[in-house]
Length: 256
Ligand SMILES: [Zn+2]
Ligand SMILES: [Zn+2]
Picture 1 (cartoon, rainbow, N blue to C red):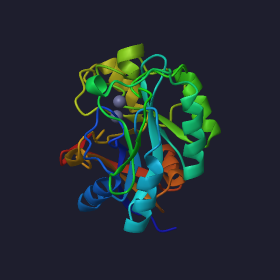
Picture 2 (picture 1 turned 180 degrees about the horizontal axis):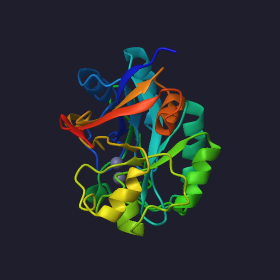
Picture 3 (picture 1 turned 90 degrees about the vertical axis):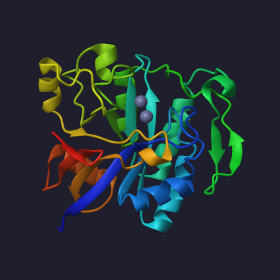
Picture 4 (picture 1 turned 90 degrees about the horizontal axis):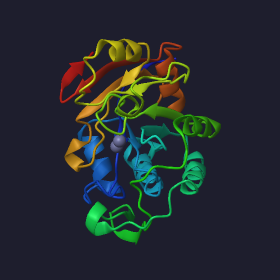
């Protein structure tokens, strides 16, 4: 099996996330991914996947692999990147998540608009339920449910000062069998030995957490894979069959 390097940014929001720029249309995201020489991107809006399919279709035409995903907020206010193999799994997950998202209306004046768009970014309709909320599901619950859909759950910015494993729990649950952690780009906790030691036992990635077009690709993880797929990413996290994480880059610098 021939392995080669794939440059991946696995945490990108679209205009549907109320806190993200309205500029983040499917076409602009794919254009930016190409100009940044990204081979793989994941679309991860807060608690929804309603803009994922359109980015996947466009990516397919343009030669950028789009991993369907979602950034979920658990009951403990921990953010998790949830990544799936295909469009039907993410659709099933999206439907499931909806049942656990509080039925609170978005106030666009306060939180921002939540547009569901076509390829060009033309608004089809607005998501009216507020997406910036915690699901009525625990961390453990989310992980198990994601795995039932064949997906991967990776704590987002695990060492950030809010909405992270460390900010909410203060530790990395040792019995959770996490496949990987996403490092935050500017960590207040990274230097703390105890947390660093525990996190070093797990594979770590870094991604942009893009909320603006120009963020895309500014942080990325380089993988050695046979092809651009979730299956291959999982092998790389496990260090199996030669697949591996080659390096992590933030703003052009290589991270440890
Ligand atoms: Zn987050
Ligand atoms: Zn995010």
